[in-house]
Length: 89
Image (cartoon, rainbow, N blue to C red; front, side, top):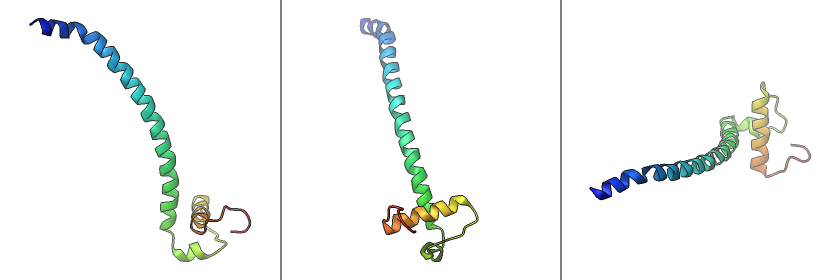
């Protein structure tokens, strides 16, 4: 019975310790999420570019309807050829 009373008394300090840990974890998670989002955006660009026909990929100058797909195309083109984007694509 005594240990139970001791446990009840120690709850507030345990709670504050937990709260500090949670806050630290949340900060770390937020940083990780931001990094993951950036990586996912890049990955999505590359992945959505993969859905484009290969014929479009091999053509050096492409006229696409939306700016998003054209950037994806150039991004993927650089990614595939390993060029840095300097000079003609």
